[in-house]
Length: 112
Length: 114
Image (cartoon, chains in turn yellow, purple):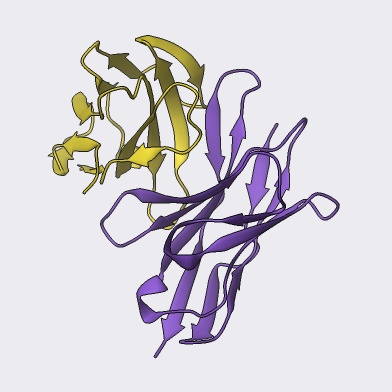
């Protein structure tokens, strides 16, 4: 039912490794945001892309990076994984001028 | 900086009774306020938004929210709760200063008892 698809749904990585999470948004959704949601907490804003350019960033270190592609897909890359990076990562997109986001179901990342 | 606060970790209500989930906000400029709901192992679903206009905003699944500028509140309400409304609810504010982002509260878990 959701127009935003994230992959994979679950992932286990080892500390120090790198990971790429993927998101496919609805056609016309040229704004995409990524969030980190730790267990029992609200989503924390990582960054936002608009027409393939980053236009907003939260309090996350540079090892969190992203890309947005012309086909409304996007990626979140995390380098040098730490145990505290274990969380649900959510992708959310909206149309230009829209206010409410459509969220994907998330990727649950576990770092061991 | 923009922020929202949800003062209750959990709200318990009996099915059929009215429910209120509280949210207060702090913004500079005009507030853009939102409510989202999250079911287990799912992403967030948009319920409603306040941008401008009427203080009572109607949204999905029979929910509504009342914007109160003097009290800087944006409480979520429903006249008659359903067991299926049990979920995690997030209040959010859009911050267009210093970059574009939507800031979420910590969430309130709603438990509706049959």
